[in-house]
Image 1 (cartoon, rainbow, N blue to C red):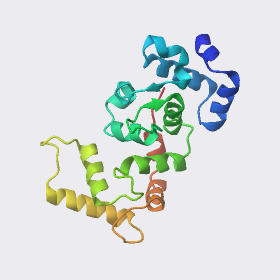
Image 2 (image 1 turned 45 degrees about the vertical axis):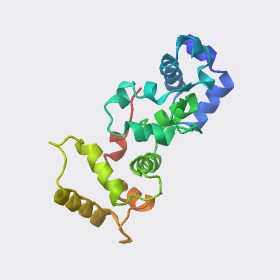
Image 3 (image 1 turned 90 degrees about the vertical axis):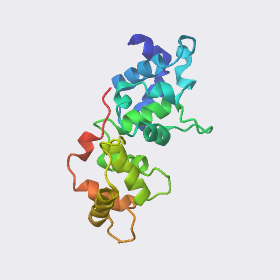
Length: 190
């Protein structure tokens, strides 16, 4: 672990602790895991490198996650749109999914992950994609049109407080606030 600490300047390590919900040890472990995703010749400069999305998706915590592509998309600051991640993007992702993150932070990012078209609301299309991700998109697990419509209608009846046919962030957070196990189930463990 001492090797990782020497590659992150002390002032930067302190800044990461202040800006995330991660401890010093978790940040150092994150640095080690992030570095291991890079080719050997780039590992010394992990703080300034970008890891391709294909490598991020090899992490066991994301490999089986039905929202893996959306997670990478939401946390990536890549200007090229390739959803690659910098070390700081990686830290942000781990911070949001940590046990220490607040329910408000977790619900904000969950909303962004479920907002597949990035328009700031969960509409019927987003909800259908969400259900398909959760149930699997194989033929044997796919819901019929009628079942999908009924489920989306039930979700909207439960969540759409202003009855506009969509779920906005505050409506989503209201629903999540009534689900005490949400925060504990929305995590990635280092």
